[in-house]
Length: 86
Image 1 (cartoon, rainbow, N blue to C red):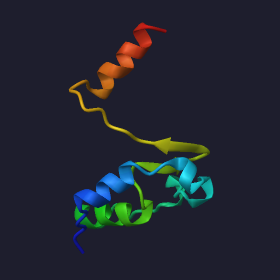
Image 2: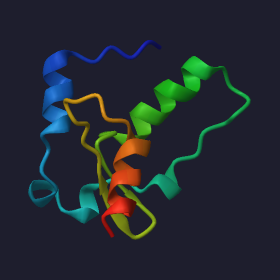
Image 3: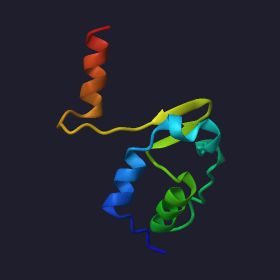
Image 4: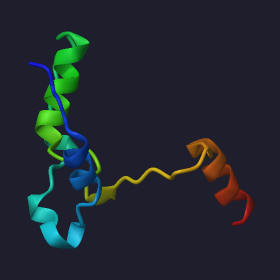
């Protein structure tokens, strides 16, 4: 099985608002089990199939909403900037 996601589907997933779904409709990472002995492609496919929306999910008790900026600043640089200004 090869996962093909259209640009429109990606945009839809990225723009999903937590308020429109509710926590009870999100997938919790703790409920995803992936066999590390399967080939990499199968693990990737299973993750995307199970997580439903890789931009909006639950990890433990926390709702996670991932967004990527349109600039060239790395995550490490952003964290360093936050620490500097604390």
